[in-house]
Amino acid sequence: VNLTVSKELLTTGQIFTGDKVSFRINITNIGDETAYNITIEDVLTCKGFNGIVKIHGGNLSTNQSYIINFTLSNVQQGNCTNRVTVTARNSANEPWAFATNVSFEVKVPIIAPVPITVEKNIETTATYQGIPMVYQSDIVNFTINITNKGNETITRLVINDAKPSQSENLTQLSQTIDNLNIAPNESFIWNITLKINQNASIGDASNTVAVTPYANMTQGTGVSSDVLFRINAKRIDNETCTANYECQNNNCMNDGKCHPSSWECVNANAEY
Image 1: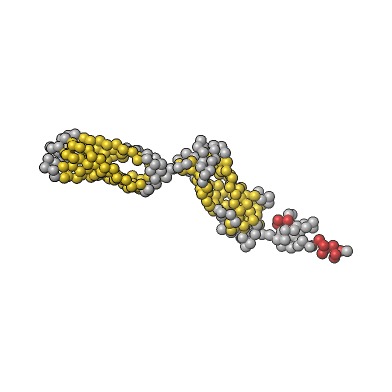
Image 2 (image 1 turned 90 degrees about the vertical axis):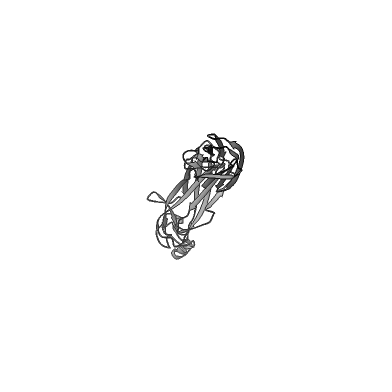
């Protein structure tokens, strides 16, 4: 018995998670006698899927071929190997075996079937040269606005927020949010709160969020957004100020300086 066995991956191009992958097995008898009791065993080994298909194909005469097509659905990310083994017997009932395999890699989607926009803002009224400004020890709120710009309903968001090194988080910064129903052109708002360290360095800082959307099992391309802000120091007593939040005691008095809350009474007693 002399058989040739070939296995072909019919799916062309890059293969992404959730795709269908098609194969073709071609068995040809190139010998000078009939191959009897042919058995085809196909073994697929992939992440999240291991399967064996066994087919009894009967007999195969000289110069005849036997072709099998099959499709694997919803492949997952990782490397896959698909091996087929064909066994047959000759007229003397002697066994013969022939094998071949094909390997392929499943990648995560690199296209954006779930396009979104992400806008991140800091809630503060103070500015420094046009940049939002906060102070040491301040508790600062950030708002993240995620808008569905596609045609599919978003069912999941994976949010990862990288907090500045000079702060501590008061709310959960990174999480996966399931069971969403964000229709096309609708938005989802997520808030986080940070506390600026008491000894944070004065200067510019930034806060970046990365968001990856899903429409059911389809993953879209992640989008990030950052916000730049200025960290400043609180002013001590008798330093000039223009607003309460600039002072350590949170009291910018009518003389344009920071004072403790009892300053006006003490000052009045001194004058009268």
